[in-house]
Length: 504
Image (cartoon, rainbow, N blue to C red):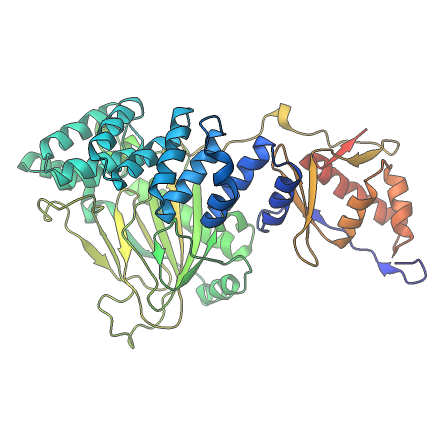
């Protein structure tokens, strides 16, 4: 735009995490199709966004080689497994496992079972558990095989060996419940699964109108996605990932403050149970040092519900019910209820060992329960959404967030005489008419910027000082030079810290 028609100056760039980075990831792949980190990033993105067909079609033909990148093979194999292509899944996952990709082992075992290769699945599964006793996908397959063949004593003894090796997994309690044949073994299971001991349903004390305000805030968000095939929710519904990342919002900040306080109360009430001598109890063995939370939001209506599932990364799980609709018009049995019990690994021996139990949540209720409590929900068959915010307190070994080392941090300091230019590792893509994305292909760090930021990025094709950039933008926009210079400096610091711009 010419200086005869100046625009008001606005400039913004931030490392926001809620934009869809698909465009810039695909742009990076098109520019660097042989760059391993870029290919891995595309594979992770396609799998996490439920684009399994695209993942298999785009990367599958180029990766079916034992020399291919193990992580990419892993995600191609997982996508093929979800699509029911067990031959492709077995080939991809076996290559990935042979290359040392540990996370592929359990899914390879699962694929072998799906192909009917039961003996091979069991043999590889048992060897895997010897090395990795906490491998949940592998244990699920091995437990299921032993239950199907009614080898209950073998299963019980295996669980004891895994437990002694520090291999508690959330599905192990279900396996022990289904394999318990003697009174002593049944009593062991009851101590771990007693509903009165481990389950809490508490109405949170919140200000009048709080849940309605929170419901409106969530409904107005643009972060809702369709239900992914990798999760337990089926039917009509939608989902928001990582809702805790927005905890600076006053409504969510209030909620998570209450949730953390209730978790502390839950632990304090059971202080007598959390003692070192109770190491044979999963709530003691898997208890984290730091109660780190991960969370998501689910809204369902009509036939939307959760099938039987379990939270493998969790220690303590919970759900806050933002809105439970009026169910008086629903003819469905158990409409809107949540049911707890053993995960259905195989036929039950005696359902009185861990009897299933259903509860009816209400708006404003907070549920807390061990993550090894398998659960499902029943459809409401009404039109209004049932909205809940679910969360996990991550179990021991997963509770400490990974942070970048000092050596990984980019230099973001520069002076008025320093020249800045685009980093050679950066790629750009327009996300929509108002949002532009720039990413460093090596680190995966990216930022979102407005149209003015995109113009600044275009100017960085050649080296410029901050003063030169301010002078160029003053030709395009109305504004005070000192203010524009300050805004440019802040955005450039963000660009340099993300690795998309560099100081010469």
